[in-house]
Length: 300
Image (cartoon, rainbow, N blue to C red; front, side, top):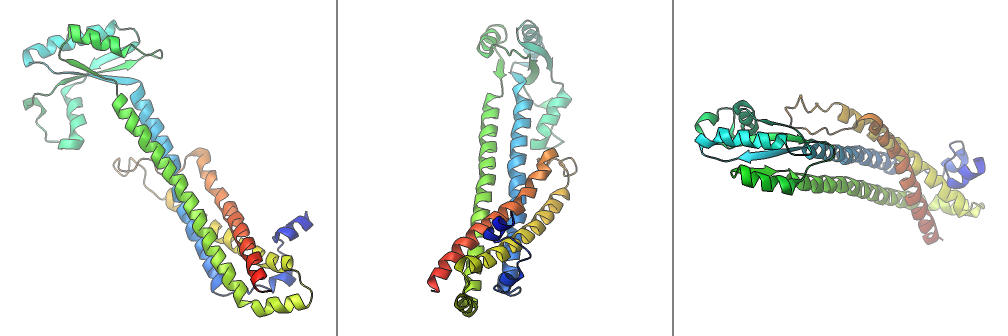
């Protein structure tokens, strides 16, 4: 195991090779700061991906079991058509229950769009009838035909046109979150590569002396790989901690007046960001090793 870690360049106690890379300098804080900043952003990208999935599931579930019938009729026929629709729904297979929305409920539906002072009583608004479907579902086309025959002013809205855009939007948000993670990893790899090249160039004289006393390129590259990997892991750990703290301090959707949509982690989701320091270390190890071996070939 020790030999494997030594070949990977991740042994802490190998002090001889630590002298190859200066412990301080601009590459030290640049690597740690970059890894921390990218990990901080990655936490919010993960939160966006997970929250968009929960939001889509919640909206789809809320809309999938309910449907609405809109009744547009003259005032003297509204009560009769509403009663006819309720009786029709009561005899429709697959319909679990139905009720007509009160004027107060319809006012509450319109309030977010027109404000609380909307004079509902003076407007000729359609009557809404809400019903829930059973587990087996109902025949939407057959229900539309029955409504056309018994209540000509009634129109069925099964929320299909609402569910499809929500699903598409949620999938695109989730894709955006994962794409952000890929871009964050690429930016971290590019910055660490630049920092490793700068450190290698600054220590060109030390590398020449090490080669004169018999040091192999694998030993020299391992020193840089270990140092930059540890810097990235430590910086990413700090960034993840700050990101989780920021997520935890976000107000809830209720406290924010419904503005937020549950951005954050729930349950096991809080453990997912803990993988980010490991991923940052793997990115740093790969990027530094490739950059170190390439730069060492140039310095020959």
